Amino acid sequence: MKNYSILTLLGMICLSITTSLAQTSAEDYVNLGLSKSEAGDSYGAIKAYDKAISLSPKNLDAYYNRATENMNLGHYDDALEDVNQFLALDKDILDGYFLRGNIYLESGYFKLSIKDFSKCIKEDPEWSDIYFNRALAYEEERNYQAAYEDYSKTISIAPSDIDAYYNRAILLSDIFYDDQAAIKDYDMVIFLSPNNADAYYNRAYAHETLGNLLDAIRDYEKAIELLPEDSWAYGGLAGVYIALDKNSEAIDLLSQAILLDSQKGLYYYNRGVAYYNSGLYNEACSDWRQADKRNYPDAKIALKEDCR
Image 1 (tube, rainbow, N blue to C red):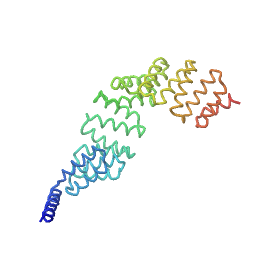
Image 2: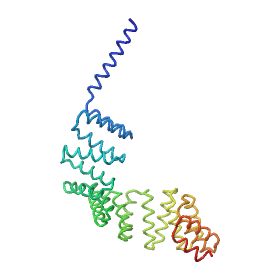
Image 3: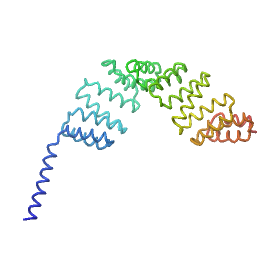
Image 4: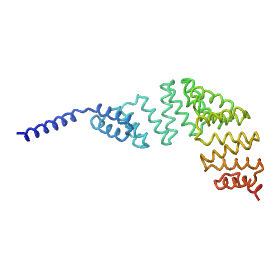
């Protein structure tokens, strides 16, 4: 009797589990997929969405979420297949075009992404994220004026969008050569995000380009304070000190930059310049040889002219 009783109990438990699984709905699997996604388990999430779709082939949430997971994994063909199915089921949901635009953007089909983003903007002209993402696509297409206008529109709708100010500043500096305007955008980035080391570094470089060397020094020093393990700010500050004929300080900074990143030929080249300016010609030539080994273009000229 005792053994029989245990077997009967086990049979009831299995029956209970089987009945519970049979009653699991597509929505339950969608929710499971969301939980898996929040836990960082994209593959587990996709399996849950697979099950939801098998139970409910027209489940919009399952197609949309599975497309998102596949995009995040770089499975762009699968993501496009899902988002296209989503839009086939309901062509009026703008989120589908936004998602497809992002998939096209990440997979390198920039013209197609611009087309989808433009459709979203036509239907919802106050959707700031669309302008920002379309700006990214325009940049990839080298339509820099259109990118600038979209970043500006993003800012007009969402005046606290740090990324829009930052990206517009880079455009202003690198493409339009308007460092003064770029500095104003970096000012806003730093106002909104006071510990943004990249903004301090880039603003320092813009100040340096304009000849505002004291402002550049302050910004490079702040970038080093915020991100001491990054070599770029040390190298940038050293460049200013070389311009000010403070070669000893530049040598110290460039030595630190080289400790952090020994593969950048620029650091060796500039330290060679600082050594040369200090009358340390053997050290200068040694550094220029290191720069040449790292394919820094000006090193060969320095070696030819000053290291016979």
